[in-house]
Image: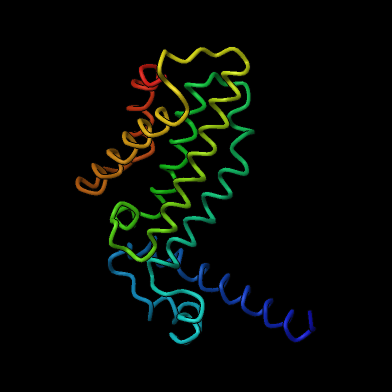
Length: 196
């Protein structure tokens, strides 16, 4: 690869990083619905054309930001889960995901639940990452002797926990209560044993 191509790739990576870093504080200050691409661009010190070379919409940049947060969580979560029984691992994993949702605000959750947004593929990718981590935790615990209820497997356990989590997100979006992570943790803690 030529030096000019490498330099261009580095500039593009830095530009994406600047856009993401400019988006996060605005999102926290204004919320998803009031955030505009022009404000993101002004905060990043770029033109809207530069923005559109890397992202197709604010949904797209938000999805990218969320994916980064989820990747960091999933790469670091094993330390927190170590030594916990499976039910507590699953509750903690989903509670940590809800903390990410909390940082992005209730209106941003709507984007991930709405099938009409442009970042639906990002939502599926996020779901697949979280499902893979659930499967890993469940299969490891089963290999170590944890007995699942008859007819239960990692797929249906994940989908049940995911459905409960989505219900928590929808409730949070509609009612605006303060702490989605704590709310989800309380509900999942009461139900997780029945799901296994």
